[in-house]
Image 1 (tube, rainbow over the protein chains, first blue to last red):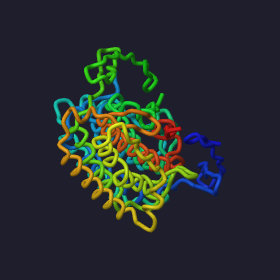
Image 2 (cartoon, rainbow over the protein chains, first blue to last red):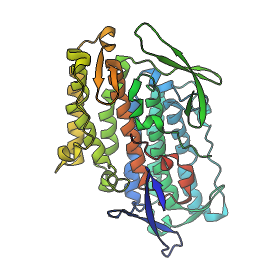
Image 3 (cartoon, rainbow over the protein chains, first blue to last red):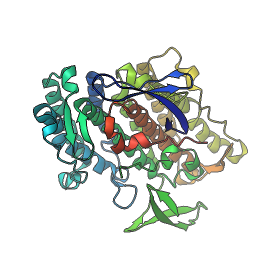
Image 4 (cartoon, helix red, strand yellow):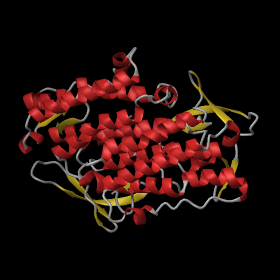
Length: 214
Length: 214
């Protein structure tokens, strides 16, 4: 059972050859399986994220770019900085570690605060350029690996999550783009929390609590 | 008091000349006021949304475009359809109603399901073109009104929310783009809910419950 948006879905669990548990959702009107990981479909999203962020943020007035949700929460500027750090130090580094060393070598932890150092003194437009270049480089490296289905099932070791597969890493890279797009939309909407007046009651994004990892 | 992302913020309320209550957030480390409504800043976002959606979605594989969150929830395709309906029947129609009739005429209710009729038989790429054109037309009409600060304070009547101002309507138009970008990122991430394996624990977007209006 899984609860999404107030509705409860049943899941059927199955265990195919690779030992991973696969949950297929059974909705009221039929079966709604989520998408299986597919390398080309993941790359289709990964390749579009820099363009989408550029279209949304380039030359936007500073209020939208630098405002956060209070305290040490992140602004649009911080989010783009964080995505650059991921390209430089995490995603492809971890993929290569899986392919070269398997479970023998644990991933280095993801430094969620490295962007403060990486972004110092830069403008958002510089960061957007850097993210575009870094992502293009990552994807060129990924495509040069010519991964086969058997490679996608290879195992690595995460410092907190334990054994993971290369396909899970690549699916997470893709969903991680979406988690920060989701955050960005929330941070921007938050700036108009008072300006919308009574419409605050109808705008779901203003009731999103961020759901950050504990 | 207001609770955001698990933290509780205090608000100072003030009542400037126009009668609207302004809440300024007082954070632990100082005052973090949200942005006041500013027409040019709102237009800066409204003008970018079609480009951002186009960059993210055009020619994306169907799995990402047509999958939803189960039952009668919305896909990326439905979300773009909904945004088109808003341009054609709601935002500028309501703005003109405020300017021409004030509180005397109530807005027509927003039809949240009209997109099923508007999108039938169309491709996502057609919808992206239609949204781009419809938004450009709306913004041309908005700019042609040459709104003054006194116009932004004019009142209208919402069928459920009661009296609202033109500036609240225009702020809501902007935040409404963000609520659907937030939704879109969540719907896309949802497709990889199983594919990410144990990383599900770290991806906040997969714990977002949608926060739709009751």
